[in-house]
Image 1 (cartoon, helix red, strand yellow):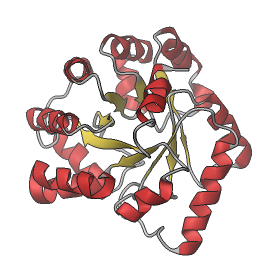
Image 2: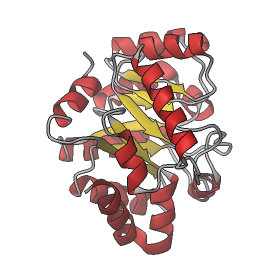
Image 3: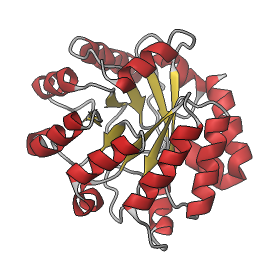
Amino acid sequence: MSQLAEFTQQKLINKPILAMTHVVYGYPSITESLSWMRRLLEEGVDFIEVQFPFSDPVADGPSIVAACHKALEQTLDVDTCLSQLGELSRDFPESRIVLMSYLNPMYRFGLEKLAKRASEEKILGLILPDLPIESAKQYQQACHQYHIDPVWLVTPVTPADRLAMLASQASGFLYCVARSGVTGNSSHEDKAKEASLDDYLAQIKQHASAPIGVGFGLRKRAQIEQLIGKADIAILGSALLDAYNQGGQKAGIELINELFH
């Protein structure tokens, strides 16, 4: 069992579902994003998914796209980002940080170097949504060498045979997109779509031994409660960013408490 999967299993002894919060590195500034991450960790979130910005974040909705573009007005450096996340990881051993980005900036940095540096900084998971597993052999080898979990994504429209393959190869956790489309607003609360999500997660569980994380469109406590017993990690992205934009850290923490406590 990988370190991420073991961490999740241990945490689930005392919680019905774990919370993963999403933060864009460098938004609205590097200092402020690191302060927000530290506040989240002080509040006891289980995971932070830190997004290193890219100019064309194809899986993300308007809130995260705008945050990425704002962050890129500064000069950002992958190695510095990893060092800063490593400091947080060491300061808060009861939580875990995973790094998310797109292939372009990470390929420029070097995928083997990325896995090595992530390992050094105790960043145990990497999410690259636009890297297909068929093109990832060297990346997978580097992750295996440095004990890093490459996190794969599946969606409700992933073909059954491909879903089974990705689920069976997942190690730290499998990122299950709750609906088709980009991050942000969702209307999947109605009964038909609830049933569809339940069927989708049940299908994944047939093939995945790794923990299951669910994201995209989670905004209400009822959605989180629906996932209990069917998934292990609820991923809060655009909703948290929207709350932060409207009322700063205080509003973001209030949303987390409303959804998870």
